[in-house]
Amino acid sequence: MKLYEIDSAIEALVDPDTGELLDFEEFERMQMERDKKIEGVLRWYKNEIAEANAIKAEAAALTERAQAKQKKAEGIKGYLQYATAGTPFKCAVGEISYRSSQAVVISEDVELPDEYMRIKREPDKKALAEILKQGTFIPGVELVSRTNMTIK
Image 1 (spheres, one colour):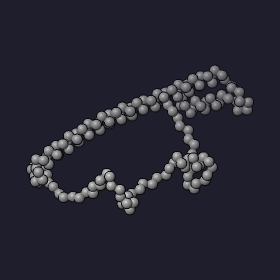
Image 2 (cartoon, rainbow, N blue to C red):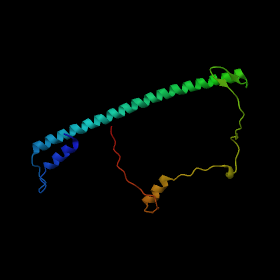
Image 3 (cartoon, helix red, strand yellow):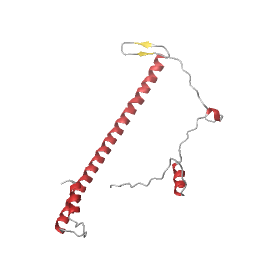
Image 4 (cartoon, rainbow, N blue to C red):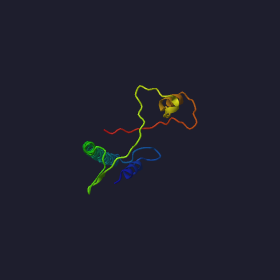
């Protein structure tokens, strides 16, 4: 029996006119079956979380390995740059070439005028929540209450 079917069966055991329980033993049996179903779904949930965490841990380990390989490759690239000293090189495996580029370098102690600065703007949700709690209306902004379930 599915969980929603158990809930319907429990509802059917209650007299709609008086609200009295028609069959107490059947009610207890349905409650126990309902509890077992919920426990089973909870176990399923916990298994999925455990598997997700195991996958995350494996992904983190693989990311760490990839970063180590990337760092090693950068070291090898530096060695190749030292070995070729800016001279192009070509062979069957690949080729090394050089090109010129420009970059802007800004000293840490310099103060630039505002016209050369970018400013990131974003809503202050904490301040908005306080204003909304005081009863102030702000078009397009609302304070929404939510119920968050915790599973341990």
